[in-house]
Image (tube, one colour):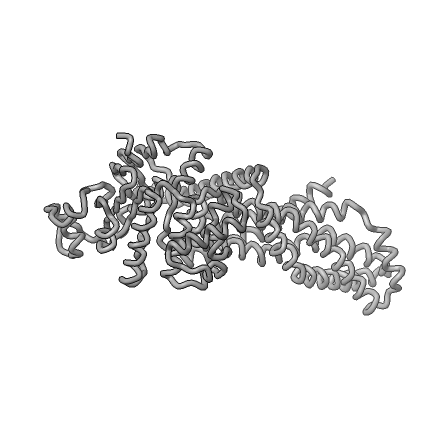
Length: 262
Length: 254
């Protein structure tokens, strides 16, 4: 009888212990990352390369995502508002939903797929081919050389991407309203500018910075701890994208609540 | 007495329930070339990683130049790494950097040598391992396995380390290329007057580069002696290993 209970508890306890161990491991990783982001030496050249990888080369993806998001929001809200004869509200709905939600969340998710995966694969391969050990034996701290430039670049670049995405998304809404739904262009621009509030932009930018941290952190963490050859690297890549995407959606809600609750 | 470069006492390391090192005692004299032999999975790599500080042992002591390395702070560890070079089994070249940047990595990142000077230095070291200046601007993926090993060796010796580790230097190479690498290892260790610690299961390589050989079995050093003593030893384990026989006291766990 005792053995049955024992087995049950064991089955329950093992994953729990594992989970707590992972949590501790991640916490230590975060602490080490932040410490190494803030203390010299800084590798500016590597940071520059990450700016290009995360920022510049993500522009097409972010542009396409946000323009279609802006367009679809314009179309959807128009069909809704038309029922109440309140078509003039479309501009402000596009503005608010793009800047607060769509640009940061969609850009975050797209960049997570693009960059999180690439980072986990690159660092994971470096781990399994002993390149990270080689860094250490050459007296170079892998956190400073690999992790810090990526995280710093992520935190700085994502907000810039989102600001660009804001403009493109609003432009998408404008295109649909003016060319498809026959709005007056001047009126549309006017009502967009009138409704423009700095808080909307700020929330989006804050979200973007947090997402930038999450994406690069998950990419580096999962790559760094990968084990056992090609399979391990594949697993790390999947974990990096999945965990970053989920965390982005969770923190998207938390940040929104912090800014707009009450 | 003062000539002891590395002194390992009672080193223990386990991963979970699996005991890998179970009380290793080993001493290396300055300028000596010691080869540790042993079957796959006997903890040879773990031993090297412990000495380098890539793994933290559970128990025991490792002294380099009389200085304890276990529990050393970051600064001391970096200083220790400055004294060491390592040739990794798979080469472990940085594939995002060109060949010369790989070789000059330590010079560029730590000694802050200007790039032009570092490149000249890298080409000089590449020449010592038999590679021409034309490979300097290639990337590691463009090189053959033997060339990658040479570049990796060049990187290991470029910072003029006092201790060089060789992790299975000849694995995956054809016998002739293996012998070329052996010659290069002897050559570069001699030139620097460095202490060399090699782990391998390639007996031809071990006989060639070793001043002294030690055998690791079940987490302990069960035998050590010169190459000459190796041929005449009556230790059954060593005999079985060097003759490459499946019959004997060593049972392969499958």
